[in-house]
Length: 209
Image (cartoon, rainbow, N blue to C red; front, side, top):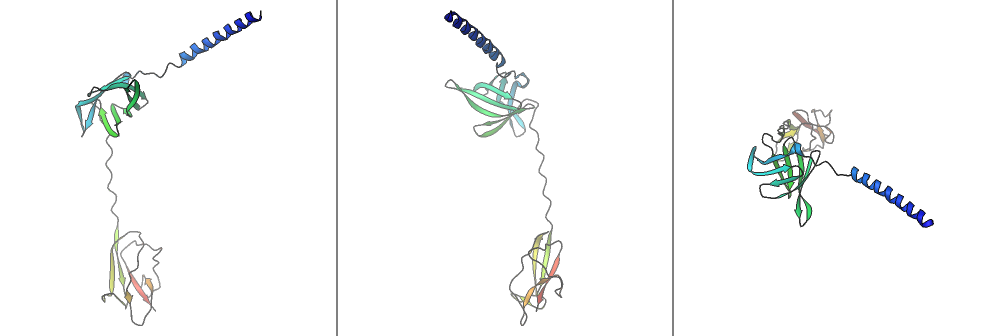
């Protein structure tokens, strides 16, 4: 009696397992491989023209090219991967994107573009020339002193707008001590070389004590 009951339970368990197995198989038939919307021949795009001697043809879940290579293709959204058969195993041959008739692939590290007839890659907008940097002239007036060589003034040209300055050296005046640079001869407005920036052509005057 116990054996009969055990056999019945095993039979019921197997039936349930089979039912779930068939249901599982039905739900996991794999991704839809209908690539008909992108099927066709894509020609090598070079220098704005199509080179029809080099191409890749997509046909459902397979691909071929002008060199006689072939394999399977996997497409997900705009991403595409081409596979080849290597010793009975599928190996990735190239990967990239496929959109609006433009097939962009990375093949052995090289970026290659193929296009359907009538399609072309989107033109990248030309880079705008950066605005010219405004520059100014800064004149240093020794204000009674002299620079090396006896000159009473010294100029820094092509000083970029909003940049700080580096003070010139080798300034002397017999009997006086140099104490900095100012925007006026009296020294009432001292120039701060660490913080002040150039916004126009200016003259800085040596301040002596």
